[in-house]
Image (cartoon, rainbow, N blue to C red; front, side):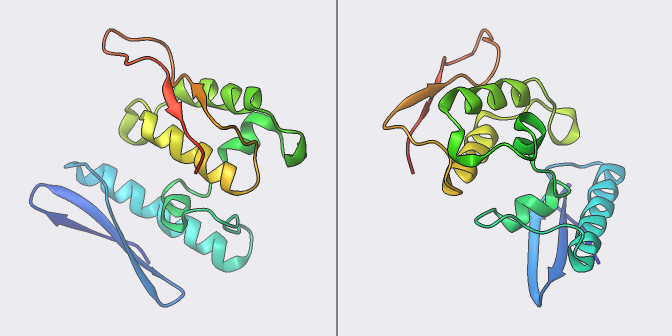
Length: 152
């Protein structure tokens, strides 16, 4: 069961899984949004317990649960795309698709979030490069340009 707790003005979610306690700040002051995230966490935990979902090897468990178990690369590339055939162009395609989407609380996805997704994918055996640039979305007045994508 997931619960929410208000600290100062902001909420956080707290839940237990496999005997371990997990907490995450929700960066919101809206109780309705916090309740919605807690409901999503409970649903994801139920699907994990039932074996309907499984956490991909090497994935961040907390991020996986908070995302509702979504695997964004499958949406971009398809479920049966062989990992050995992936190239940097596939990663760029994924970044461009995800950069157009909104994250939690209808905010644009952060370049850091996109880097984490790619880093997690690369940890699974995705394409490697000594140094590449991956643009994190359309240029904005404050856009620093391409984000350096460094090997882990």
